[in-house]
Image 1 (spheres, helix red, strand yellow):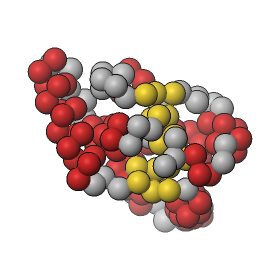
Image 2 (cartoon, helix red, strand yellow; image 1 turned 60 degrees about the vertical axis):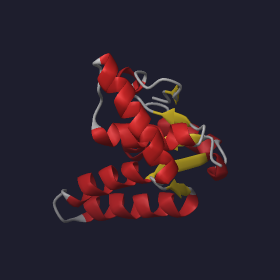
Image 3 (tube, helix red, strand yellow; image 1 turned 180 degrees about the vertical axis):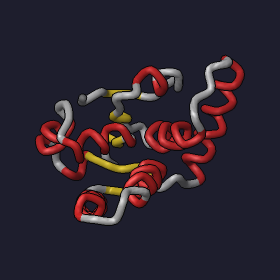
Length: 135
């Protein structure tokens, strides 16, 4: 099972070659990297909203290539169970995060993976979630 799950911000920084994200990605075996399906959804939705042209096609092609070379981890029953627990705990503490972020966190948490994000302020609210910021 991959060790590192990329979140949407990390994927975006990798494609834009910002921070140390692309460099760190290149230094790791592809078997250590995964993309949770909620991240794939967010990335593709953003790309599809771009105007038609070379940039849009280039980004979609890069996303397809990346997804072909790493594991795409589904939001499945195990992740749904984790997501329900995360949401309940965050609601009780009064520090809720967005529903897609809950899904992203739950996929990583349910598999014991490290979520790679630059959005640590949001995700650090999730108890037990391991985080790294490669930016």
